[in-house]
Image (tube, rainbow, N blue to C red; front, side, top):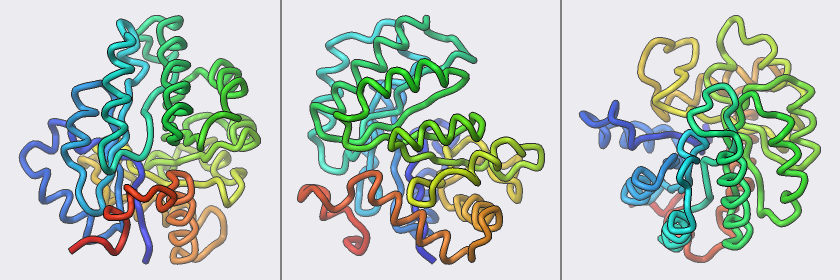
Length: 267
């Protein structure tokens, strides 16, 4: 079965005791995974974890938008030049946990979108309770972006349709498997098949069959199974669809410098 996890946080301290074992389990189960940054230091750590089958995504989360500077942009630009960095992110807006002021969040978001356009890289977006502003900002920038991935989608079906209409990929994590997540499953049911993604966001949101455990990339299979059931497809067909979508969303294969890290390049 073809599987990928395009969004995990293996720099998290919860992996400090067994990070290499988690990566080994992931690469036994998956074609590839992407370790995603949420500030400058752990974006740098994500780059350090790159190896065959492991990519990095670098960016500053809206939680850390206060104090985001042009120096940070310069650091991210330099990180983007490293082998295996495939996207900017996660950036975006979070109006649920307003750990940074909304104007600072919007400014950091727009600046990272501009950097993604400059570097011709996809962008990974965190959006929580900020659909209106996220959609408005993306409407102004989407045409210049290589691709847009709405990570760990948590809004309703109407919002899912609007993001898909903008050309975004819409990615679902383990919470789509929770029994009470009916609105989230309704959203997953309306996303066009070619725009659908699955991820873990590990160590967060372990899917229902392993709920309560620390999530890890290999657990993406449970989310794939739930999406297959939801959309009336075999698990194998859904897995292949999602893996192909993920490759396309992250433009794997269209840059020569990524080739040594793509599937099949592992020793």
